[in-house]
Each structure stands twice: as C-alpha cells, then as structure tokens.
Length: 599
Image (cartoon, rainbow, N blue to C red; front, side, top):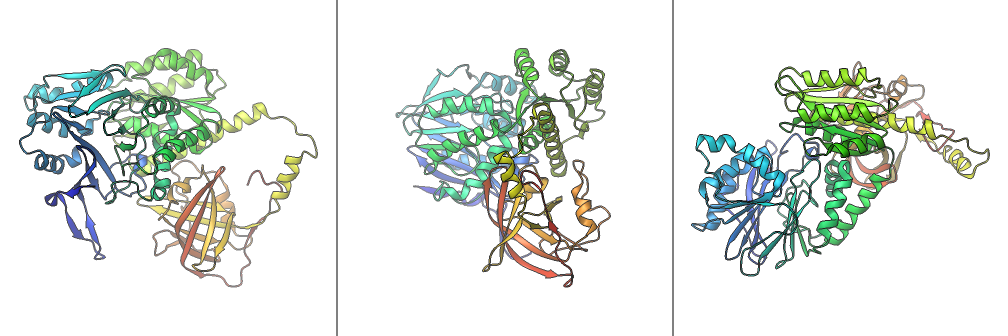
C-alpha cells in the first residue's frame, strides 16, 4: 500500500514529561485503485459530544477518487481546514475537483466548504435533499457577502437510483441512510474498488498511524462505544440504513472516523446487528422528541438518550424537523414515557416543537412519565413553555427539567446522561409494577436466585475521574483475579455513572471499607444527576488523580487492562499499580444478600 504523509502538516513537540506530542496533521494513504484517504488527525479531544469522551483523539476521514474526473468525499470540519487544504493542493496541483460528495452537512464544515468552493468554483456538490436545504442555509451569508461563489450545480440524491461516473471504471452509487441525528445521511459505493464510504457508520474515535484494521479486535471496545453513543438511541433508522448498505457487499468500509475496515468488516457488520438487537430487546421504550437549531439541544438529547439505553430501556429518537406527525403520534402512543426538548429562538419554541407538543398532549396517556430539556442563549422561554404545558397536561415528571446555556461541556453532558439513566430506571420500575405476577413458592428460578445471594463480597467505594468529570459508586462485586501482576475484577452495572470512566486505559481507586462504616450508608442512597458524590467527605488525591477516601481501611490505585460485556454488567479487569493499608486492625465490611437478582 502506497502511503505518505505531508511533512509540512506534522507538528511534533514535547510535553512536560518529555514525551512526543503531535497536535494535528493530515495522513495520506492509498486504500484502492485511484483512491486515497486523507485522514485529518488530532490526538486531542475534538468536541464536547459524548462519543469523544474517551479522549483517544480522532480522525476526520476524507477520500479522493481520481478517475477521469475527480471526486472528494466528506471534507473535514473547521479545525482541519488549513492543513487539509494545504495537503489537498499539494496532492492535486492544478487539477480541479469535479465533485464534492457530502455524506452529511453540519455547520462545522462551512469554513472548509467555503475554501473549497473558492478554489474550485466549478465543482458539483452531491448530497441528499435534506443536506441541500441545510447547505443553502449554511452558506447563504457567505454567498451574500461574495466570499463564496454559488456552485454552478447541486446534484441532489433524492432516491437510491442516481450515480456519478468518474471514468476509468469508477461509477459511484449512492444510498440514503437517514437517522434522527443525521437526517441527511448519504453513503457512497464504488463498485470498481468495492469500497463503501459509510459516513457515520462503522467508525471509532481513535487516532493513530494505523490506516487499516490489522489486528482489528483491538478496536472492538472503541467501536462498541461509538455504536452505543451514536447509534443505539436510533435503532429503527440505523437498521434500515444497514439493510441498504449491506446489499453492496463491500471489500473495504471507509467510515468518517477511525481506521478503514477490511479484515474485520464481516464481523463488524454482524456485531452492529447483534448490538442493536440487544438494545432493542432490553426493556420499555422512551420517546425522545426534539429540535435543535445549532446542535446544542441535539447534543443534550443524545446524552440523555445514551443514559436511557444504559439504564436498560430503548429509545425512539425523533427529530421534529424531519419526522412526520404520524411518526410522533405512533411513538407517543407506544412509548412507556416521553421526553421533549427544544432550543429557544427569538423567545419562542420552533414551530416544529409546538406542533409536536400538541401531538404529545393529545395522544400520550396521562400515566406516562415525562421529562423536558433544552438549550438557550439568553432566556430559555421555550423550556419554560414545555415544562408548563406538560405539567398542565397532568403528567408526572420523572426527571428534573434540564436547562443548558449555550454549548454543554463534558460535566453537563455527564449529568444529562445520568438523568437519562434515572428516567429509564423509573420507567422500568413502573413497568414492573404493572406487569408483576406472583411467583409460585419453590419456583426454581427463585431458589437459584436465593442461592446466588449467598455469594459474599467486600464492600468498597470505587472512585474514578476523567478530565473534569469524576464520580464514585458503592461496589461489592470486587475480587482478586491475578497474583502477577496484582490484578482484580470489578463488575459494574451498565447503568452506573462510573461505567463510562472505566474503559481500557482508564484509572480508578478501590477504597475498601471497614465493618460498620457510615460510608456505606452514604453511598447506598440515590444521587441526583450531576450531584457531587464527594461533598463533605474527607479525601486525598491519589497519584492517578482519583480520590482516596479517608475512612477506608485500605485502598488500591488501579488501571483498566481489559473489560468484557457480561449480560447487564461490564466485567473490568484492572492492575493494582500501588496501594496502602490505612487501618491494619479493621475487618473488611461484607455485603450479605438474600437474593441474587438485585443488590
């Protein structure tokens, strides 16, 4: 494989520890006949969205197909505009771009598109109809100011039948892959090279020098996290998109983010189906209805939706700007609870939200729990309107109303995720109360549960931190696993807030509690989303940045080495890097249970 990086785009320096640090560059690699990937890379956290929270960097993948005519697929966002354009011009010289193909449109791409249309004013933009509407709005000011020439041709893909022939055997086929988060989604297939340019599907937010997925299982956890964050809350539309893309039977999948997928493509496509099936069958459905002007409300809604799926419920994500009234009506009739969110525009809620609110109030049973959220710049009247109307409608709120000013930060998104988890647990409890049946005495499953409850574990407090987000939980499923290195396993329920901070490479502290410690009672209670778990606690900071709780009998500083999905929990294996005994005379607190089907 021919591979080259543009030397002038690579920035290398050293951090305080003397380690090499690279900020951004563009890596160019040949991935097929006449086809190259231009991977705009950053080793930093890119944005505030929840799927970037693991802080492994990311790549914004663009692709060049050089037939008799030249096509550029998915130019990157504004952070990469300068280095991307430099790399592109270094590659093309005086050769023009004939087609710019957009898998989706977002405001972040405006600067790059502006520059491209200035350099290549004859380029034809290929996109879906929703994308064309967004594009005209997005670039309207630039057109009006004369900084960008209107493209002479805008080829709109209305169905799945249109193609673009680049010559030299490269005939591009297109398929609409809309989802609530990306209603303008468009995938591209080059039958000559058998490459599927999959937009937001089959990606991962990781950054490195590896172009293809050799040793592809090392990305398994990252790809699953990407799926859970982005696609699990919109399964119905995701499955429709997968049906369409799988008809192509690609030899290489080229996503927007992360390495290209060749060696693990069959397994990854299978895993998308399996992950979706697990989520779809895991519990009651919550309808999450929203509109978003600048992406902030959508980001909040996505975080809430991610928490709902972690909490054991499914989500029907409905973008009011593109959903039909019948879609909204069907969702609120079938759901076990609903949440509605809106931005504030000129002191009001958008028309689409007002219409959706009327449908919800007319069709959702009064017994269904509700929630309200939104973002705003100055006042937030739309959120107040939603809250008042839902309250006047006689619905019970299962979460506190979420108000976010401007763009949410990582801590805010974590609180929103926790609110979604709490909402899902409320809905699940309500469903159980409605469907509970009396079990016969001596039922085999009940006896098995009683036996399982006799398994005893030490009571510990797990503390974890990533950037400005930190949390803690009471745990009793902790066990030594290895002697050398000294290792242990921790079972963490999927809905726990700490779960997102205990992925491979993350650090945490195990604080082992003594008998009759008041700390166990403190951490047994339910916490509000975003509530400080460490308020009024006497703590120190461990070398790994997490909290040591004074009052524990011992502690261990741990680093996650591996983790495995097991039913409704994650089993995390971690190496104890250092620790200490704080009270050598204390006996360890044990957790005695009567049943093995709950804590």
